[in-house]
Image 1 (tube, rainbow, N blue to C red):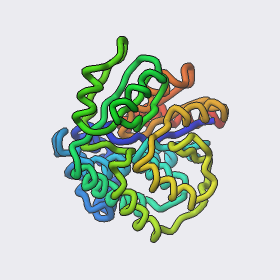
Image 2 (image 1 turned 180 degrees about the vertical axis):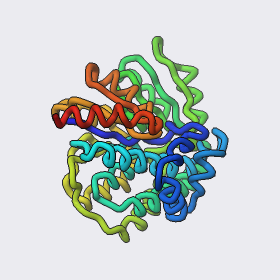
Image 3 (image 1 turned 60 degrees about the horizontal axis):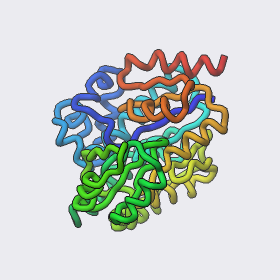
Image 4 (image 1 turned 60 degrees about the vertical axis):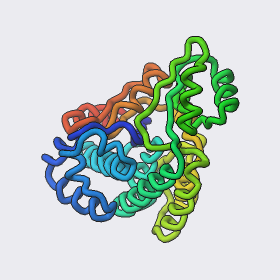
Length: 306
C-alpha cells in the first residue's frame, strides 16, 4: 500500500513553484487556480520573499495548489493513483481533491476563503505556535494546560505543537522541562485552537455550497486518523479541523495498521517525510519537492503495483 500525503503550512520556500511552471499546462492551471483562490499564485510562487509567502492568506493557497499539481503529475506519469491519501492541516483540501471528494477549483476556492478567514481570526489577539521537542508527553501536556496553551498538532512521538497567546508561549520557552526544546514557528496565529472560531463559521458557510462525492480511494482524516468514507463527513471534518488539533501521529499509526509499504509526500514536500522517518521507520519514502523527484515517486508507486 502506497500512501500519498499533502503537507500543511510551513513547507514552502521562495520560488518553489518555478520548476513546476516549466511543465506543460501548469501555467494555465495556476492561472485558473489564482482566479479561484483570489491570490496571484504565479507571482507569489516565483517572486515573493519568505515573509510574504508565510502570510496565511498567501501560504495556504500556494501549498494546496502545489500539492494538487504535484499529485496530478504523479498520477499522469505513473498511470495509477495511490492506494490512500491524507493531508496535514490545510493539506486535507488537496487530499480531498485528489480523492475525488471535491473539484480542484473548489479546493482552491475554499483554501482562499480559509486562509483569509484564519488570518482575520488571528488578527483578534497576539497568538502563535511553538514546536515542543522531546520530553515526556504527559508532562508536556500538563505544562501546556497550566499555561493555558493548546496542543494544536500531535505530529509524532516527542513532537507536539503548542498554540496560544505569545505571552504564554514565551512562558513555555522560559519554563521548558529538562530535555525539552521549544521552537517558535513562523505562523500568524494559534491555528487549530478556539482562537479560530470565527474562521470555522466562515468556512462552514462556504462549504455548504460545494458539490461533493464520496472518496474514490482510501482517505484518512487528520482529526483522528480514521478512514473517511462519506464525502459529507470529509467536508464536515475540513470545517472543524480549523479549530481542532491535528493528529498526524494517529494518521501514521493508521497507515502502519493498513500495511503501508511506501510513503510519498507531494510538493511543497519535506516536513511529512521527516515525520515519517521517525514515526514509520523502515518504510520507503519520497519527498516530491520538484518535478525532478517525480521519477522516484513513480518508481515507488509502480513498484508496489508490480
